Image 1 (cartoon, chains in turn purple, cyan):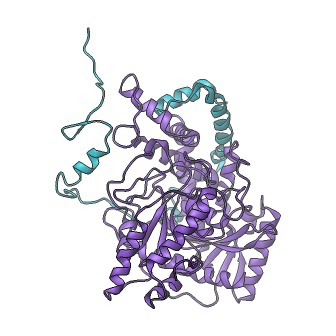
Image 2: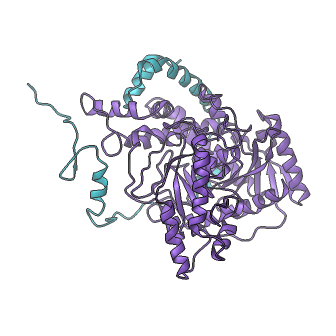
Image 3: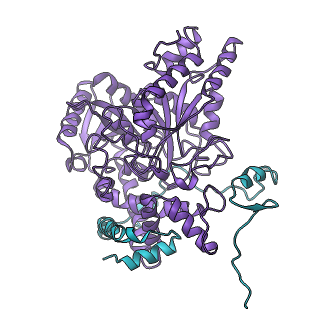
Length: 472
Length: 104
């Protein structure tokens, strides 16, 4: 089997073939390493490829030889976003300030994947500290879209999405604060899940905005995303916001899907608009009921999200002072150490957000911005609560347009922020959402739709996502 | 209107040194971003009384999540690993520049 390209298989297909002895985890891993060698120079999806990946795979092969019972993820090669800690490996959040930081413990999700026997291929590029939507804000150069290397892969989990979309990982983990799993998944033709807030422990994920962050899978298929989600979810005593979510399995065959027509009507690229209409028609023909819904507070979602995120990230990033982790640049005194280290270690977007966070939290402005945003956020959540009494899911496009050119928006942060219009309300409401590919543009750029469901109803998302895979 | 001086003051508060050449662009970007998010000023907020308020404003599904005020683990279990990441240390303590100086 050596030399054969095994990188087109899904998790279940690969697991079944390894169990049947058709090939080994080592051969599967080598197949991906060959693909990485071929494509990563151009894509820059990985910041580091782990030199022991084959050794990890051999451990699984030995276990299989001994007849140990192994799950679907045993021997599956995965890529991990560079803000999720793996003990004794570098973890930099794509920032100069943590360039040589070595993780002192495993993130909860990594513990779970290690127990499942996953092979870690490497750590993937991202916008520095997950701040961005294009992976151009990495301190280590941009990642390129596997479908058109002149374009962005989306972000901030752009390395993970480009790795899966470009066939250099079977699946990956990303983190999502305002769309950072779903938007890049959509730009790269992959499936991305932002789980219910609290369904997956955040322990060991570098915090950006703690009330919004969630870790989730980026995968080739909805089934793969579901397998990974079911592995990484669960109760972790060390994340106080995490809870033990149950597996609900009572999804109706015909679902009621809400379409927020007014919310999706503005600023859509025509190709996204026609793809979205075609997807709606497909869902109708499959027997689902489509109803128009109103989400009046969503027009404030983007402003509410950015104020909340600036505030929380400036607070979270205060810990990077050059004393306890990473790089230190010496100043005149202790305050000088802080200023020099953070000035040299943080890139322009991180500095901008930390300063904006300081502004919206400062005396005199906190009432006007931060507390106002907190009040608006509750209205957004109330909109979700009201709508989910009527419908099983909400559908929108994942992003207002397909992947754009590298450099096109980097000089205009506000234009970049507006790309997140459909993804940020989900994080504000703490609800789960799934981005699924729904076709391509004439140039071959992937397009996608996003389903949102009520808290804890990832099962509804997976059901609809699987149907989209067969319909589009 | 955000001025260059205001950006410098905010940068000082945030303890981030911003290169002088970036201040103008940063002030311009902040002006545009704060202009956009200012739409919040006219937004309604969640009511603090009435039926809707009684429904509960929690964002997620988790309430009252404080951990017991007890030792989370055996003392010293992770010290060596954490000290290893410090820029400078002495006898397992973080070593920093003095913050008080003697009056001459």
